[in-house]
Image 1: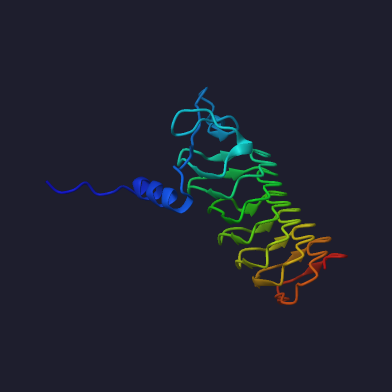
Image 2 (image 1 turned 90 degrees about the vertical axis):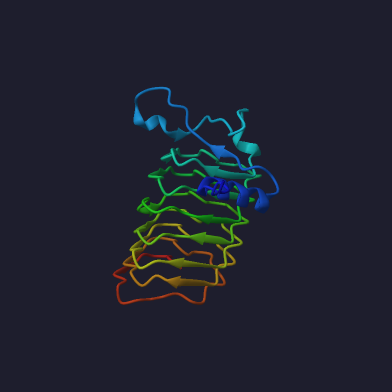
Length: 212
């Protein structure tokens, strides 16, 4: 008999346990009604079947059935270090990871269309963010107060940087890419004292007061 080939899920779990030193926590939804919006993270259970609490999670991967993360879902979680999103995710609400001071890296999924307002505000340990190439808007205060963020790549699809988007990112030194930016709103980069490299491209139509 041939050995059974590892599934993608098995490989992911193996990688996660090796990377984190603990079993993967899979967030899955409880379908309490026929309403498709029930596929949302608010209350949830772990893969192992015991109850979890938002404020104690350190590593989290979302089940492929999860399509929505509600606003403020993980707000103020001081322990969370890493979150892994599925390709199937449609929506992440405002302030979803606001104040997650231990979060270090994030790769946002395709299909969101924009980075939600205040999603990573005051994530003071955040060093790396991947923004997919279908994002058009960086929401208000999306990365405000991310004091460990040194650089970020904005794909050509990004057109609008909303107010306070990168405000008080005191370690931010450069913006890479950004060749499609059209508008930079009020206080978008205010307080970014180390920012010396910014792509002022011909596509920019409006820079609002105190943007820098």
